[in-house]
Amino acid sequence: MKKFNAYHLSWLAEELRNAGYIEVDEIKFYKWYNAINDGNHDKPQDEFYLFAAFDELMGICPNPIFSKIVSLVEDYPTVNWVDAFSRFQVRSKICAADTLLATEADFGDIWIMGGWVGVLPLLLMSKLPHDRYTSIVSYDLDDTANIAGEKLVDSPRYRAKMQDIYALDYSNFSGTIVNTICEHLSRFNHWQDGIPNNTLMLLQSNNMFGVVEDHVNCVNDLDDFIRHIHSKEIIHKETSTYNDQYERYTVLALR
Image (cartoon, rainbow, N blue to C red):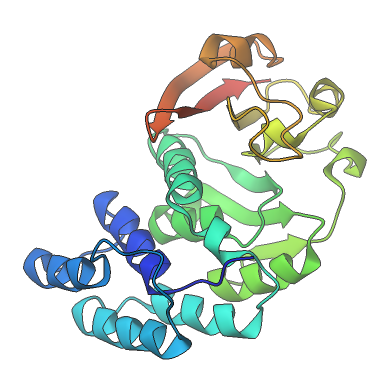
């Protein structure tokens, strides 16, 4: 497993900057960014280079998210931070957050399926007015990631629980369901059957067949994804492209 380094920190910072989740001095930021991304991403880096890059970034953008990340990378080395904060992962969570933020819904309790290290709730809670939701709970089988995620989000209104999402009781649930891991669900239809009618659902999948071993439920395109969703109304749909090769599909719907 690759170790999180200054390159990954710079890419994460740029994605957050591009999406408006952090504010930076453009000239200072890109001087820092370009110095790190000198074209040789395969050269070895030690942890001191990461800390030096972090210290300089904090002088440009003193956002606590970066100090939390650098600390968590050291404290939880078994978590795949490189993947968790990759451009593709972060863009998908930004798209999900922006889709929810663009609605006028009162979300109630938000349940996130497979929330991993908490990037989506971190983004949501940085912009979502407190009166539009009650709490956010992530259900994930990786308890180390759950613990790290709670520290990253660092809010009494967020909890991460080790729970199989197929075993959850949704019968009395009246909030919002978020599932950005539909491509991982071999029993996607079975999972949907448990969701009460009229539930607001934010769903994501992709066309990354064979890229990851447990991508067992990828789809061909956005229309293919929608055909697999049990909904009475599609509120929003979009396709995001990555590296001119892979696509991620985002759908907001009523069950």
